[in-house]
Amino acid sequence: MQTRMTIRLLSSLCFALICPFVQAQKNYTELDCMVKPEMYINLASPVDGVLSEVLVKKSDAVIKGQALARLNSEVEEANIRVAEQEARLDNVIKGKQLQFQYAQRRLQRIGDLFKAKASSNQNYDDAVIEADLAKNELRQAKLDRERNELRLKLAQAQLEQKIIRSPIDGIVVERYLMPGESVENRPILQLAKIDPLQVEVLAPAHIFGQITKDMDVTIRPDFPVDSEFPASVQVIDRIIDAASGTFTILLELPNPDAKLVGGTRCTARFPITSTLKANNSSAADDDLPPELRALLKQ
Image (cartoon, rainbow, N blue to C red):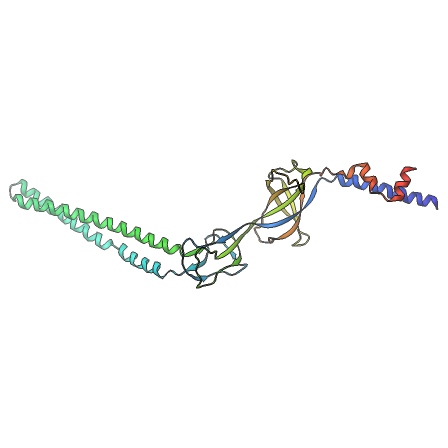
């Protein structure tokens, strides 16, 4: 009976001594983490006005450049119609071009007659002035067209300011305003960028220096269950928090299919060996049951 007890105690002793050593030999370190959107954006209007319509709702996916909301723009739309009419000077320019060509031909004919002394000085001077006036009128018509085209572009830009577009690919997190409300100094929507996601890790100080930028890390989120995703180290905090003995690591987590959601807890597996005290024999002895410690002292 005493022999069996001794064998059991020795088996437990071996397990207790070997397990910490095996644990210390793992070639990775796992740390708790949090998956977050890469950024949040409170989307506002560049100009004051009254909200006319909101084209998206909460949780909608949006793409960069997509129209999300519009302000009342009746004045701007009217300005565009006027500018479009003013910019249509092709017929006017064509008429001025014909007048200029006619004046040049007439000047050429009268000039030939004048050289042959078959035309008076007055007729020649009148032809020169007529040609110059036609040339100036053509030039002015072209300038008017350019100016009106600029006015049209200005009116279009003013109308574009009344359309609120998404600056990123992401999702709608929150709607703050409803149609009919003023947008002055107030955000309309909150957006979140979820591809890539950002993973925040609070790492213990004893692994500081072992983490390198662009290091490959495996992320195991709480949701989806039993799934793993590749991430990479992007930012390593250069200051250790003395109170907690930790520093922050930020990872980039690609999420092209939107399988992951922000706000999910996770585990980050780093390809490093943590230098813990688990393989210290005195620490291991302290964790032994009383009967094993007594056996070791015999």
